Length: 170
Image (tube, rainbow, N blue to C red; front, side, top):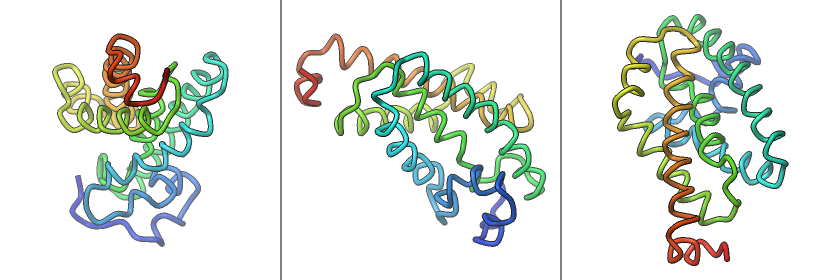
């Protein structure tokens, strides 16, 4: 990851950069992955009521174009997985919320679970991060971190009544 901070000029260089940089959230000078996940909360809240198949189709499209966005931004910046590239966090958070009832509580819990797995990168997720290049490599580890977070969130929501009550789901 590059130490050079991306700029607003870099953000506005192309539509690919605009999306890859998470609409500008990736320009945060520190914790860009965390800041980059924030727009996903709004996206998840807006899409949360969609039919499951439509929601998953949107994720698939966001993933596919994200591979291209991230590859283009990486080429432009001249470094693999620059910290400003956060489209992967957005898609990973969307994956986290698959089939989860949307509430402030589930969005917050999903956010923290996703960030935990994205930072920790257990086992195969770390391998993917270190061994798959280009836009696909940037995107794929976050999708799997999102899947782990989704599983944990489902367990909490559906099998731990105190958590569901806390999140005001029932």
